[in-house]
Length: 299
Ligand SMILES: C[S@@+](CC[C@H](N)C(=O)[O-])C[C@H]1O[C@@H](n2cnc3c(N)ncnc32)[C@H](O)[C@@H]1O
Image (cartoon, rainbow, N blue to C red; front, top):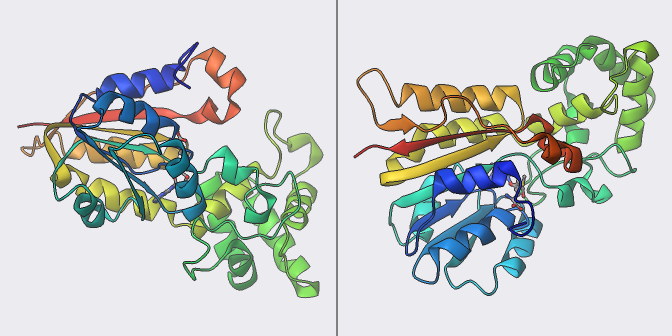
């Protein structure tokens, strides 16, 4: 990721976070360890890099990538668990924090996780499959029609949310909706052919919405945004890359509230969100909706 054309978003993230030798950093969404590696290279062996992921299999990938970096400390945790993450940094406050929200292509491409409508698999979608929390198929079984429609509309901005919810309610009377292809086909049949989106699969929004609901993604982000500034050192930077308008709104509001109105705990470093370059969205369609915002803690 660091060689050749460095994508605009990665370049800007690193510029805004400006990791320096010996600093203490948090990567709250370690994933496959791409960003973490870039940070580790810059803070060097005298720094501390706490890498968290709620998905144990992703953390194992990050651990593999970061094996050669003595600064890296891997923690299986939700990024909203700021106390534990601070403990992993020996109680020190962070000079930098990064969240790169959502899921990685590794998770998306594994049919057994149930995130994708491209191959058949169980409708699971849990980041942490050991957590005992309800999987997507449980929500599809238990939620009533209105609750389902609300999930699809709120988290997926799906115009046909009611029709899709009705189709699910009717279908599950005959058999439970438990497989990704079953759901993808139900969604396709519920949206009139002429209204299918041109640039994405017709089930994209419903799958995104379910994933956000299953993992309470907005709840974790809100909890992080509530507390992160207390764990930043003076001059410490935080960057958040989001992929959904609701996430971006939470970040924008939290940064603004903590930088004004007599609090002035933070200085916002991005008046407008940074978005990827045209070339980047061509080679990496996932980047299409990405927005990067950053803030710095005042003294
Ligand atoms: C987009 S990927 C991050 C990719 C990473 N920046 C890289 O360079 O490889 C998001 C990762 O964050 C994890 N994740 C998402 N929400 C989380 C949360 N609330 N707590 C901990 N990990 C989370 C996902 O499991 C996934 O591995």
